[in-house]
Length: 114
Length: 114
Image (cartoon, rainbow over all chains, first blue to last red; front, side, top):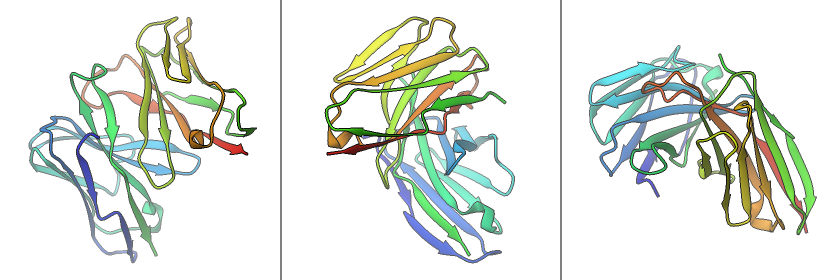
């Protein structure tokens, strides 16, 4: 257990509405990540953070923004949700000192955009 | 970007059979990882490989880092019902940095018939 909690676990929203997903960790990990998982695509990196207020883009960052105002929380925001953003979103942390820094994932947040 | 080909896409086997799956890449990787994902959960790290030719076991699971650095194999011996799930490979190239440089395969869906 890497101490990761994602919320909400399930959300249904309408096209054009803003959505924020939260990733909370309790073990003071420096690196946090947001991935999306879609059939036929596997896991793709959206954004990541390497410290408070330090974030950068991943492979599929268009339409998403992130914020990290404190170590324990990494927020993913869809400013205006589209149907193509229907997906399962996973937060991950890099656990340094274990397996030389591999990723450990949360349980996922399933988002449906109608 | 880097591409990972994971095969087979799905497997239907009888309980007690051995399972083999593999990932190949067009690029050289310095790390290979194998994850398992149960329905409704996040991926869980099974095995990490860091050296070409390395063979590592975790219970009934054995994984190998290919000598060419472009492939990896996962074997499961004497499958049991709880082995059902989706298995993902992931490779890390030499790009380094906070993005972690991980590329994921699209997964092998393992289904076990009693």
